[in-house]
Length: 212
View 1 (cartoon, rainbow, N blue to C red):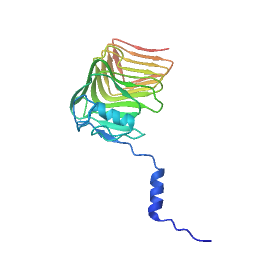
View 2 (view 1 turned 180 degrees about the vertical axis):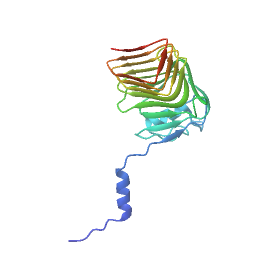
View 3 (view 1 turned 30 degrees about the horizontal axis):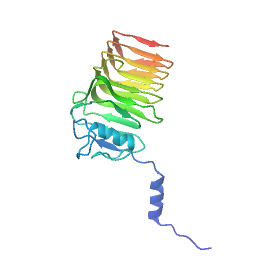
């Protein structure tokens, strides 16, 4: 029988093809709230790139896996809510440096698509985040303020909060689990309906915790 020789390059290509795609890091380089083709990368464009797994304006294409959107220092105003339909982390330059400004309204809305998640890290958010379906929400080292309703709200999805301040409102989940650690809530509390609630080293003033 003939002997078939398989080249090393073919084997490498075959193995690489079997590996999952590497998650993308998408760097925001403008504080403007825009979705156009003017040669830069805004927060809205970066999340569109992460959602669509495609390049948008000058933003790097997202991947089917978890993408990280990196913010510069400064304040980014949002004129309308941004939908999140994939697994995304939005990471600022520090909560005293990067601010997302949505006023009293929802800054980010998870539409509940399976596998989608939203994590905020190292920033200040004036506004709130919301998710439907089983979409999970997380925040680490985030200062929340400004929202007229609940800061973090999830329908069926889990919520994880660590080292955050929530000034004026609270956290709510329907049929999802809530875990809050090393955080401070003033003005409102935490409500978990149909899920578990775990509070660790967390102070609440003006509101309590409720499970049902």
